[in-house]
Image 1: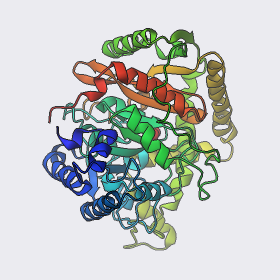
Image 2 (image 1 turned 60 degrees about the vertical axis):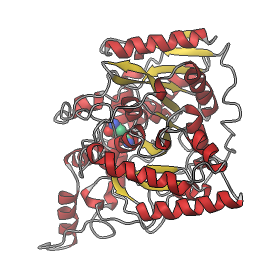
Image 3 (image 1 turned 180 degrees about the horizontal axis):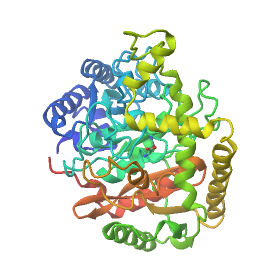
Length: 486
Ligand code: GLN
């Protein structure tokens, strides 16, 4: 068995029984990156020296039996919008191409404390804006299941690195589907936790009221393990919950018998690829066999999900990206500049890609005097309706099931010249972020040889149920155990 294909749980057993060392595993991972990543291109930066050093320290911890956690010695990759001290953090943008943070994100610190090994930073759509990774200003990432197809986005590099076994878990970020959609396209399990469950300190913001950091893993058990280690209150982020983080893995194998599974009827409409539809029907039957009660539910404001999400995202992103002005960090274009305003303009003109500029302009427009009430305020009101849709549904059922995307991974170049087409591929994943509820994506089969993703949506702070229901499915299916042929 190739060690890079193993789950965290399996590796942990090998590490603590000294059948494998973290240095050996990390070296095998780095070698695989050298061999395979030139065709996938999931990594922006490989932090080889740091990884070997962290692996050596992990082996020491294991040898002494001190402070050993389930993540000690496990190699992981991380989306390039999460700050890593002394390791370049680019957001896959020209404007931050050479930016090296002076501090760690809280998540980076928590993973370092647990003894995990950072092997590198992964490619993404610039600042998280996109659904295919093609908006990266650096290069395209390829889907390990078909190199001519996209890995999804915006955490496409994280998903591809996981799917191609170039790490043992990955950390992504989800503002409007960026963990779930690429997880679905590449046969990976991933969670967008409840907003505020994981600290955003050190995450380079896209839309601050939507952004959630979440793990991508081989299965639900690993996903629960990583979330346990990165979640929790953070004095640096006042939007984090104060409540203790449950021990998700402890009761993950509880039976799902008698639980109520809701099928939102607005998500099962025309336009879904036939193979995706049949995979969902098959999954529903599987849950029925496991003893769950199936109920149709309605999320009546679903059709407003995309416009509300995009309008609010543009507005928040336009404000957040104002800090990239060439005077503080990152790119600064001052050649021939008349004054400081000219530096701002030249830097932003050169540093930002088309999609980023498009969103900044639309966001600034929606927030401008005279238009604020008609667009931003209206969207905030409809956001409340989206949240209430979920509350009403969860007064009747325990959990919801839906696809992550109407199709499987599309071809590189297929949608890039039509931004609206690209936005439409987010139709099933965007409503959860304005509502703040958690959602977990997991492999649910194949359509035309490409992975199909399913998502489970839960109540606020009820990640426990998501893990339990995903785990039950993975005990009786083996989609998540399939690897691409590389
Ligand atoms: N497709 C979404 C967008 O383009 C993804 C955002 C995200 O989750 N980072 O906005």
